[in-house]
Length: 402
Image (cartoon, rainbow, N blue to C red; front, side, top):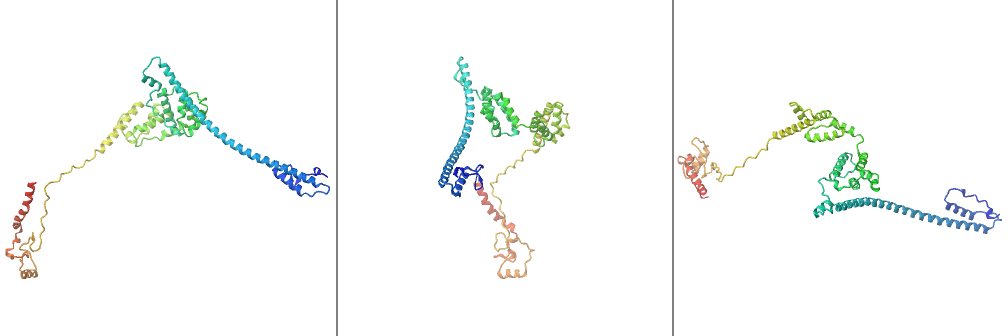
């Protein structure tokens, strides 16, 4: 029996028709043919030829597998390059819109110059016509998607486009300007329209409506009703309270009677107490004017009640005369300048009297050079007049010389 007639259906329990890796199947077949015990009638050369054929097939499949991995890597590289080209294409589309806007503005300038060329205006007039003077209307703050900032943003955009209409002579410029004022999540809603050149946007209100649907309050009236219910003036001035009240009323659109009742309910205690002593205005506008006037008077009176700040007492200039000197205190020291004023009733101990007599001292003042009956200190005020005069007189002479 030849090798072609051998029944090859299974190798090590692995069917040849299974979904295993072809390389594994061929390797299993090659190993099996090398180790198989063939009958004596089978030619060994035939067996070797079969094994060689399997090796050739194995090498060919290995080459195909390597080519597959290389093609796979090339495909991944091409996909990365494709994504980069997509991003570059989006950037080119944005630049295209910007260039289209600049081109429209340039065409508008050319038309203005051509219309004014017949009149031959002065250079200053031509420049002002080609480049309209900027109005004192600031650009709105860029909108990022904050729901509370949506309505102010829309109002400021409309005001800008109306007040500076000469800067936006066509729809393309208006739409491009609005798209340049959004960023963050809000820009994601503009990106697809920028890419197609605003082809699906018929007017300005359409692009503003896109932002309103995305970031507007889904229950605007319900939110305003809850806010007006808890709105109170408290310590704020009436103008601040009324501004917030008006913002909510633009949403609720209540009639004059309902607005007047809601406004009065949120007033602070001072205004409510003041209304007790006067007739309230019936018309809503007159009532608002009355409350504003009352609030101004109450606040002015509060400032007046505090009173002016106390001024510091004016400083008294220092005297140029010398301060009076303190007289010397009396002393028991013998020969002191101002001896102690003693009188005849002064009592001393017998021991002290004996000591003074033994040392030849005055029994009255313990001084030397005199006795008690001749003691000059018995009348100190009379004896000190000359000394005081002699001490004060030189000071007066010095002041006179100055």
